[in-house]
Image (cartoon, rainbow, N blue to C red; front, top):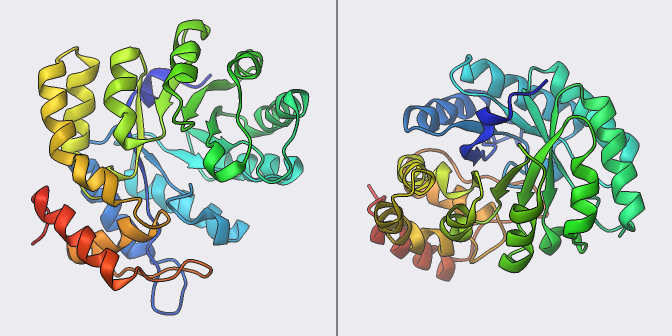
Length: 297
C-alpha cells in the first residue's frame, strides 16, 4: 500500500533536458534532480507535461523514470507521469513506471476523447489495477478539454490504489468542494503554482510545481509555512515568487521554465517539436521576472 503521506508538500514537475541530437540528457537530468532535492522538495514528478511526456516514446519514458529513481537514491519518493488517452496504453505506462521503481504514478484524465463519467471511472479502474502502486488522478481541463467533476472524482477515489488528485481546474469552488467532501486520506495537490497558497489554506496537501524547477527552496518554504498555518511567512514566499509563477506561462509550458533554467545557467533550453524556442519579446519578460525574484546570475 502506498504511503500517501510521502506525497504531501512540494513535488517538482521535472523538466527533461535534451542533448543536441534530441535524446534525453541523463547526466543533466541527474544534476537537476540533485539540485531540487538539495533545496528541499519532498518528491519528484518526472515525465509529466513539464517533462514533455507527449513527445517521449515508451522506452524513453521508462528510462527517464528509472534515472529519476536512481538519482533520487531513496532521498525522496518518485511519482512518475504515466498517462495517455488510450486506457490500454495508459495501463501499460503505469505498469512500466512501477517496474522502473516509481513509488506512485500521476495519470492525466483522457484528453480529446471526452469520456463520460462512467468512462472516466472505468479508465482509472483499469490504470489502478495495472499500476501495482498508488495512482494520482490529474485533472487539467485546459489541456484535456474535459473536467473531472467532484461527484465523479469521489467515485474514482473509492478505487483501490487511487491516492489523490492533482487539481488544475483553476476553479476554487470546485476545489473546495473536493477538499470538503473527499474520503479520509485522499490527497489534494495544487496543479497551479499561483493557487498553491489559497488551496493549502483551504485544506489541500501541497503542490506539484513548475516553479520548483527554478526556485525549489522558495517553493518548499512557501508550502512548509502554509501547511504549518504560518500564513504570513507563506504569503511572503508566495509574493516573492509570484512574478515567476506568472512568467512560466507566458508561453506553453515547459518552454518558459526551460528557457529560465538556461538563463540561470542550469541547462540548455532544447525542445522537441511541435514545441519551439521562446520568442525574443517573451524572453525579455521572462528575464525581468527572473531578475525580480533574484534568480538571474
